[in-house]
Structure formats: C-alpha cells, structure tokens
Picture 1 (spheres, rainbow, N blue to C red):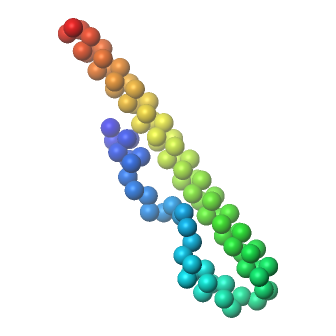
Picture 2: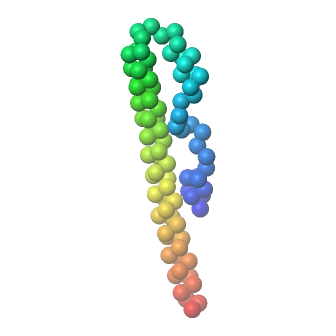
Picture 3: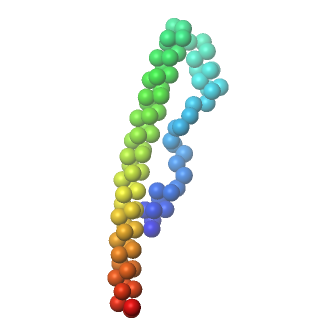
Length: 85
C-alpha cells in the first residue's frame, strides 16, 4: 500500500511548461538573433525532457512494484476467503 501511495503523491520537480515571462527576460538581450534564441530554447527543452524522463523512469519502477504488490495482496485475500466459502 505504501508503494501505491508513493506513486500517487504530487511531483513538484517535473517540468511540463515554460514560464513565458522568464523565457522573455532570459532571451531578450541575447546577442545572436532569433537563431540563437531557438538554439538555446531547443537545448533547454532537451534538458527538461531528459530530467523528466529520468524521474518518470524511477516513478515507473515504483509503479511496477506497487502494481505487483497489489496483485499479490489480492491473490492472498482470495486465498484467505476461499477457505471460508
């Protein structure tokens, strides 16, 4: 049950969107024009994707443990109830 609850806990370090004002301020005075802005944004998005992917992989492993534990628990309960029927 603890593994299941852990999987459902909110995650605050996952990045799903960029803050427009922060992106604007970071790239406003950037020299190199629009091409440099696109290049830096592409690298930032790649970095965010890689960080999220790493966290999701760990979360997936924990989900698999939780799902397996749930199946074992249900089978154990069925075995306990089967003796009383």
